Image (cartoon, rainbow, N blue to C red; front, top):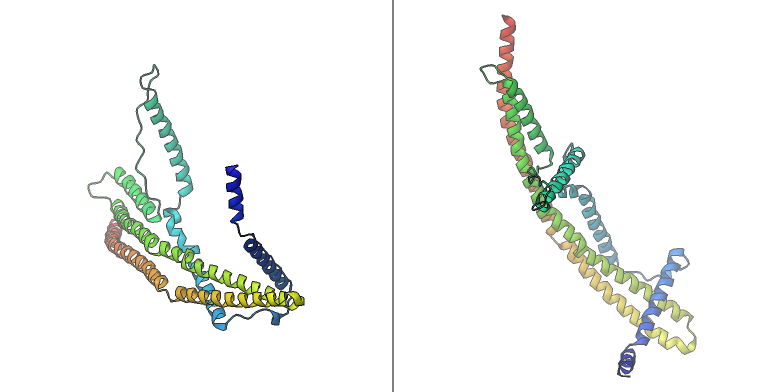
Length: 312
């Protein structure tokens, strides 16, 4: 009985009239939106929003599109292997090695103390960076090793040395590349996405509230237009309340949109992106310039030796 009384008390505290009013407004707004979409509402019967509001709306839309446009490309920096040439083949190979090592290590641990022979634990090779600079450095190192391993002359093989220099140059660039991606993720991508998902999203939500309020107002105006004499006063009051609500929500949306548009963070974030790219390409240019100069000396020397041997 006490539970029933408590349940009755809970029901008694619910404002059914308020809920019914909200449902009625929501239904009226949906009907109004449908009529506008179908073109059955005369343009002069649609409440005109302030020009300032519409101008800000267009600018916020442009800001949002600018964020999305740049993110379509720059999100590649979230994945290290965006320029890696043999990612798929090596991933399959590494997965096989990883699974095999996992099975071996499981057996090594769980077969101890049994009559079955326990295999020795396996240590996985160190994880390799998957970027084009790392791949170039590793391939040049392999090539240099192959050349130098078969060289039997007294002097150092010039091609082997040149490949070694090329590998060293790309190893430096590879380190710069890792730093480049990290800085872009932390100083550009994260805050750029944050702006999109917070302040811009809040402004868009405020605009949705304005649209819904405007639909409520125009639906209320239609109700007043079609109301019978007994309901005229109530309908007029609903129009006035809807007008006040629209004014308030429009002012809030204008303030939020101005705040978004005046925010200097997007420009600061873009500057961080450019700084990271400039530093990376500067380091790459410096490293390659140094290596190219040394390899050019080897090239000139090798060409001179070749011509000299031909002359004899």
